[in-house]
Structures are given as C-alpha cells and as structure tokens.
Amino acid sequence: MIRLALIHPQPIYRQGVALLLESLEDVQLVAAVSGMKELIHQFHQEIFDVILWNISGHHALVPGLQLIREHYPVAKVMVLTDTSHGLYTGFLINLGADAVIESHVTLNHLRKSMIALSRSYAPPPSSNHVQDPETPENAKSMLSENELMVLQLVCKGASTLDIALELKLSVDRVKQYRQDLKKKLKVNNTATLIRAAKEYSLIPIENNQK
Image (cartoon, rainbow, N blue to C red; front, side):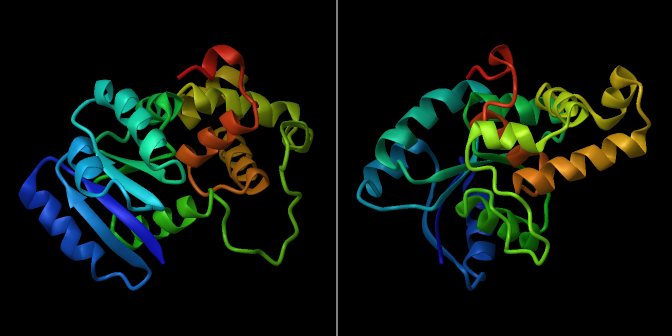
C-alpha cells in the first residue's frame, strides 16, 4: 500500500484528483493539501511513500524539496506538470525531483508510475536476467560507449531526433539505445532514467548540479 500526499493549490482540481486516487486499492491518500507548509503543519508526524506535487513554478521546487527531505526523508517526490518537453523534465530532475509526470496522464498510468517510484524505480521482476547496477562502477560497466553518449544527451533534455543528428545515428537506433538504457538501469521512463544517471554518476558533473 502506497501512502500518498497530494499537493495542489487549486481546490477543485485537488478534490477531483483526490476522489480518483481514493478509488485505487493499492494507494492510501493520507493528505490532500494546498501547499507544502500546510502539509507539514497538519501532517508532520506522518510517513509518506510518495508526495504528488503540482508546483506553480520551478522556483518553488528547491526550497520545497529541502523541507520534504527534512520532514519526510523516505518520501519520493513526483512533480505534476503541464509541460511535456524533455528539457523541462530533465531540468526538474536535476533540481531534485524523483520523477516528473504530465498532468493529463490516465489514472492507471499515474498509479503504475507511483508504484514504480515507491520501489525506487525498480520494475517488477522479469524472467530475463539483467545485471543489477548496485554501484556506479557496476552501472557504468554495463553500458556501451554509445549508450553513455545517448544517456548524457537525454539528461540534457535532447529529443530522440536531436540525439540522432548529434551522434549521426538513425532515429530507430537511438530509440533502441534508449530502451536498452532503461532495461539495464531498471527504470521505466525518461524521468527515472535521468534520476538513475545521477544516482550512478553516469553524467558529467556540470550536468549533475541541482
């Protein structure tokens, strides 16, 4: 059971999302509030697995994350955004969000994303054995030179087409590299791929600043 907190400044939207989330059997909506200060004031003794947060601007993300890490150290932060551009997603991840999800996704997609995030971006067990990237050294040794180059460009927010042009590869080849990267690092979307790249120190220091 995922213990969830929802933060959204608009009451009607917040109440609507709360009703949908309460219909999920494997999600327990513990808090639905308008802001970070309200969450801490009313639920300072709670333990959350995931905090689903719609932010009004990225300037609020860093101080908000500092409060979350202080009061809810085990919680994963999933940011709701109306922007689907990969550059913005990478920007939010580099600021410290654990995951970024578009606000128009289906409830089932949101549920699966929260489950994956609460498991520290590890997918369900697969019949195909994949080496576990337990350390930065192990993770790096699993990736080819081309995969590392693709990963670094993904973390900069480059699209598949941009990467293909930059590395002089076909679009299909880049798509395959991206799928292979997700499989090897045990993630299921671009946001968690960027997060894993940071965790395993697979991107240059200048791209790994918060």
